[in-house]
Image (cartoon, one colour):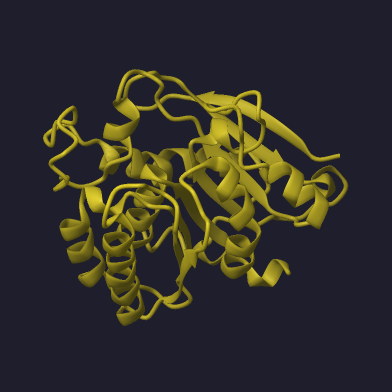
Amino acid sequence: MSRIETFSLDIPLTQSPRKIYVYLPDSYDRENRTYPVLYMFDGHNLFDDAEATYGKSWGIRDYLDRAGIDLIVIGQDCSHIGNKRMDEYCPLPFTEVRWSFLDPDMTEGDITAEWFARVLKPECEKRYRIYSHRSHVGIAGSSMGGLMSEYCIAAYNDVYSKAGCVSPASYFCQKPLSELIKNTAFRKNTRVYIDLGSKESPEPGFIYRGVENMLELNHLYTDGGCTTWPNFVVGGTHSEASWENIFPAMLEFLYPELY
């Protein structure tokens, strides 16, 4: 049987230590080998409906068990204090002025990203039989976590070779993010998945701006030598239920060797 393990790890942000969720496949205890790994944001929303913020998880454990995919998935619990999740998952100065409750001088996503790469990853490599080389290491998340994944694959391309950027909140800092990607010397075999659901927002013009933003970033990744998939999800919503449906296709694109 597969299992979900948890442990706590100090983080230089609010709500420390932070809970870490780890999915271990059924084969982990039977076979003495090393496994590819996917690090994800919002770990509480990944595996168990009972722990998910809105009562619905991505159902990742169920899918991996059903498909027999030998992958270890590690999720970091976000901060649940006020709007701190927004601060912790915004890696660059934001340019979306409508979110007046955010302080542009308080964005902490760069701290979170460095902690993932320099603290969480080495700690997990001590605890579990997972690969450390970037060719077997991915990063993924949704909404603000999707934005963080867009950032991490560029800022830490020596650490990750795969990024799943699901319904990313790129509009928070589209301009500085574009500049970062444009100026990144990407390593070979970098794969980037970005998507947008057609029903993510009722706001007039959202889809047009969202598709434009997605394609702009996708072109920059492609120009940098990355293999990309910009996926427009017809009927897709900004919800865990929708992200559960796209997870299998995203995973197969990022880890084709597992299929």
